[in-house]
Each structure stands twice: as C-alpha cells, then as structure tokens.
Image (cartoon, rainbow, N blue to C red; front, side, top):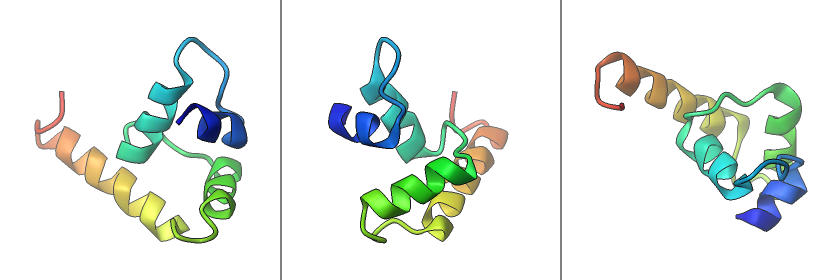
Length: 68
C-alpha cells in the first residue's frame, strides 16, 4: 500500500498506507485529479463509478450509524 500511496501522491505523512485504506473504503473523499490517478494506476479496473459508489455506500452507512 505504501507504493500505491507514493504512486498516487498521497505518500506524505506518518501513515500513507492508512491514507490508501481510507480511500479504498470511501472514508476519505477523492478529488477528480486523484480519481484519475487511481483509474490510471489500476489500468481501469477501478472506475470513476466504482469510486463514487464506494464513497456513497460509506456515507450511507455513516448516516445510518453503521460506521463509527
């Protein structure tokens, strides 16, 4: 995950792997530039729709009290 964090340009900070994990779960919002980097880094295996759906699911679960 550290390599992915560096590839995406989010490798700064004490725990870049945690930053990637937060992106994967939808916990952290993803801006358009970062979303494009993720799509490119995964050769399209992760789409913009996938990223949007993951974030929407996270926000829905948070609103329902399912995520602390």
